[in-house]
Length: 212
Image 1 (cartoon, helix red, strand yellow):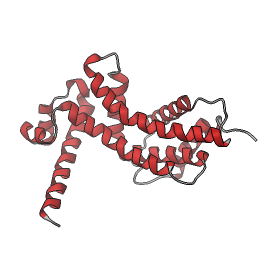
Image 2 (cartoon, helix red, strand yellow; image 1 turned 60 degrees about the vertical axis):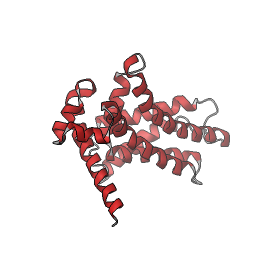
Image 3 (cartoon, rainbow, N blue to C red; image 1 turned 90 degrees about the vertical axis):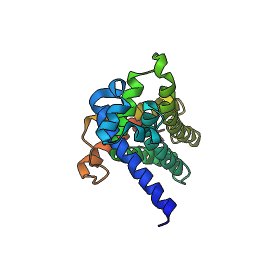
Image 4 (cartoon, rainbow, N blue to C red; image 1 turned 135 degrees about the vertical axis):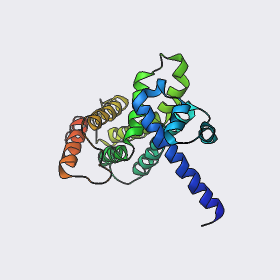
């Protein structure tokens, strides 16, 4: 391993340790009451060290909550390019999101809480709100395009609204994941968990399929 590669790995490890500390503080105190000083204290680092990696609290929170979304977007894009039919792709997107949630549960919950709490009516948080919401909208748009393709090919009903269907599907899965304990979903997938998820996905999308 070269010197530059080792330094990069050390940088990423330090960044992740800061994220871990930030997650604990944000979960305990919420976004508004969290400060860089408290994150530094939790991470057992100086505040100056934290600022070497992040400009401010907004920058740290944005990086922490959008990195998982950006990774999920890449996974969605791969699925969208596959040769599977639209119905299969929608199911694959749903399962990919569930697995991804299991690996990044806290970050998703923090971002989702911020979006639902500090919405567009809060002028002071509008910029951060838009930046967090941007990759989410890009993800939803991938699903919307697949739904539109499904309408064209006759897989889905002509009268459905792809944007509303995708939003309902996303929010339903988020709600289900917040209710049921999926902490270890990235490590193991029990039959019971799979049955619940498959049933939820079936209920969401069964109504939009075009009948013969």
